[in-house]
Amino acid sequence: MNHSEFISHCQSIVGNAYVLVDPNDQAPYLSDWRNRYHGKALAVLLPKTTEEVAKIVKACDQASISIVPQGGNTSMCGAATPNDSGQQIVLNLKRMNTIREINPSNQTMVVESGCILQTLQEAAKTQGFLFPLSLGAQGSCQIGGNLATNAGGTNVLRYGNARELCLGLEVVTAQGEILHGLRSLRKDNTGFDLRDLYIGSEGCLGIITAAVMKLYPLPVTQWTALVAVPNIPATIELLSLFQKRTAALLTGFEMMSKDSLDLTAKQFPHMKNPLANDPLYTVLVELSDHEGEEHARNLMEQVLESAFEAGIASDAVIASNLSQAQSFWTMREHITMAQAQEGANLKHDISLPISGLDAFITETDRLIRDQFAGVRIINFGHLGDGNLHYNIAPPLGTNASEFNRAHEAAIHDVVYSQVEKHHGSISAEHGIGQLKLPDLEAHRGSVAHQLMRSIKSALDPKNIMNPGKVLP
Ligand code: FAD
Ligand code: MLT
Ligand code: ZN
Image (cartoon, rainbow, N blue to C red):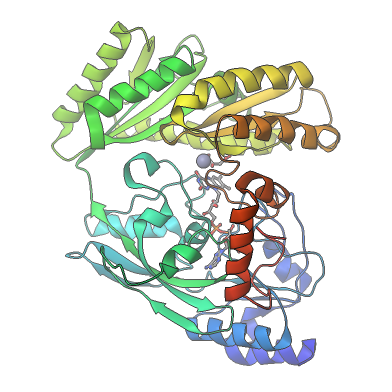
């Protein structure tokens, strides 16, 4: 099949309107959210059903055309951007957006992969349930993309990553077969866990077309506070204190450094930290309670009181209503936008054992400041999970692209060597994509890397699924 026969064949599968070949129509699908990667595509395909996806994959298999699966295209590591050959297709799942079932007694929902995350949260809420996966990109990322990246976000310390929220998957394999794995079981030890292979595989093994996701009872109230903390050890003590006193009620524990909030206020002046005296670290704490308002508020106040007495917190603001709580979260979620508006920056989505965070930050801050004078360290993240977004912005007044070109490799080296030294991970939640592909083997070791390659070649022997991502 030549390329024009292939395009006609795809048109016969999904309809002409859903095979995009015009460069203007294709443009939104060909670069990443950070505008760092740009590619070309033979076509962008928008299938509506699992059967259509299967037929497209079969055609690609026969014609040896590789496929870039794409969800909401919010990847932070270029995982959903095609290469510049113009020979790949982008297969975007956005039309597969049906919620097939919400099952109250099983506390599950069966959803197609193109459902927008926020739509799923809202649908669950209308039935009295919580779907806890929550991240800044939730208005545009898709559940298929969340599963393919094993997304994390702000509720992980209580409910886990996307992986922990998923019971079953429907997948189109690299040969175009349909793996019917929409099992709604909480216990299922029947051989190798194929679901766990596809979760986090970044589109390199197959295409997720639907999933069974867990639901939880909706809390009756949530209490949110911003807490001023003098240093990282105090932040960790505050985390332990909340864990000990509030246990499963603790659903959010986000850390924001002074520099990250200064940058947010610079770009969005109405998002100023309400805490006085610009604390070095601000922690956003969220409690979700199933008893009632008073219980939650008392608990929040009592734990904060203990934190003041122990000298690990110097100030706090408890949100007095929903809109104030939302404004705290908005400020937290806008650090990323502020960084994007400020200009190109170097991202490090890393995780460390919580006990190693202080040593990592103290040493790495010093090394970075000594070697790259004037850089701004924009450090924030999901501290309750040991996940830092340890980002580096160029010195004020320098040309960001030139600075990054000159120093990117050396800065990554410093940060990733420190991550290794402190037994962390070079990708906590965003994945490998193209950005971290060169670093994966050294980080995971040759045995793990070879096993990953064996799995890849067993499941996708022709290497048509998202080649050039994760593995070379
Ligand atoms: P895409 O970016 O389209 O794709 C990501 C990867 O998944 C690619 O490899 C792609 O090929 C593959 N893929 C997509 N759909 C499928 C499918 N159906 N089948 C197989 N493979 C598929 N991430 C976090 O983990 N935590 C955060 O807190 C967080 N915050 C963010 C905030 C902002 C403002 C932004 C822009 C991004 C954030 N991210 C975060 C990163 C990103 O949103 C997540 O990685 C998200 O899960 C990607 O979903 P997506 O639908 O946009 O996938
Ligand atoms: C976040 O936690 O805000 C995201 O993971 C995005 C980022 O790292 O900037
Ligand atoms: Zn994050």
